[in-house]
Length: 125
Image (cartoon, rainbow, N blue to C red):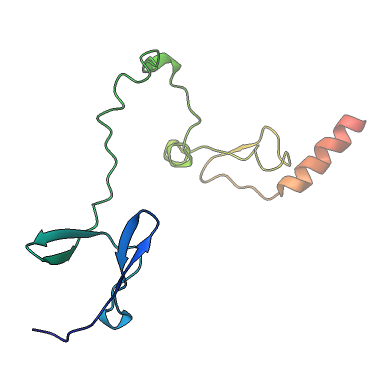
């Protein structure tokens, strides 16, 4: 058997508590099972419950929600899909190059800011 410690019980709210000496290394906030065996109390640390999400109760909670039909599943294309197709749209670069499309292998020497400035001059004329 291990080392023996003395402790005293005391009232804590509507319960009775027993102070456990810090030397035993019990962490605050741990959950315990207490088993009464005759005049003795046996404390056993509870294993923490595995963290899971039970989704079985979700079904039927929002019966008005239906899956979208395929024709309504319109999403922006992923950059990987655009690259696989071989066309890159650079018009989203802060409006600097509206309407310019590049394909792999094309020579492109002007910067989008130069093109935007040129287009701005054309509109002013």
